[in-house]
Image (tube, rainbow, N blue to C red):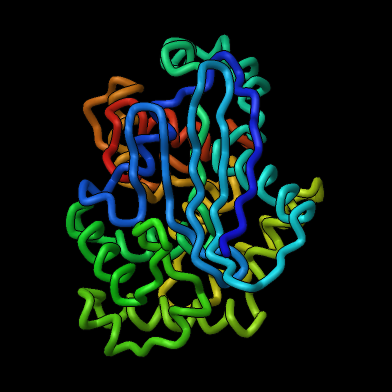
Length: 310
């Protein structure tokens, strides 16, 4: 028997539904995410069980349903209801301090028009920190379409499918059981395969308790961003851009410096109306003035031209 948990969340007037849906619509084959104008269905792993989380948007609210293929396992409904509420708020970006940010930059000479035009922009979150990290690794130095293809093969290979037919994005535990050769057969480069396997094993063994850190944050504790950064940067093949992207898309941390991102530099050049290409050092220096919202600035720069997939 399945376990079904439901909740309803009020949305702010400036909630940008299109941003949320587009973030989850990167795969046109809709293998693990099914998106239409008012709804997202996403396959996830919930307490090691296949599950489907559905966001159904109705006027000023979103109805959220979690359908878990729990079989005979009895779940604590109250505990899981609370967890679902926190998780849904996080995925929607509703716990991000965007009003404070927009007030802070309201009079900035270069940002006033951009932020006003994109008011309400939040950073939609990946369903898990592991998904944010692995997507960042998969997408390094290849096109978005190529990255989506590798991601699709990765999801199918691990083979966890919800009873609705939707496929579930793999967990670290599932991935830790794979080999480098397995990932290589799916289109991963050797270095990416090694990184994903090492990362997965560290998470599975408890050396990188990413979900525990996220849950602490969602329950009101300060995000241990520096601790997370220091732990992830030690993993072979993970660099500053990957960590800051994962902190942004997995933890909702808005102060990572994404000066290493080519689209951020390119769009900042357009914003500043300069003919000279901006290097990482110049971009890093410019972003530094906007701490603790450097990554949110990057998100606004991405949105200037709807940088696909990221």
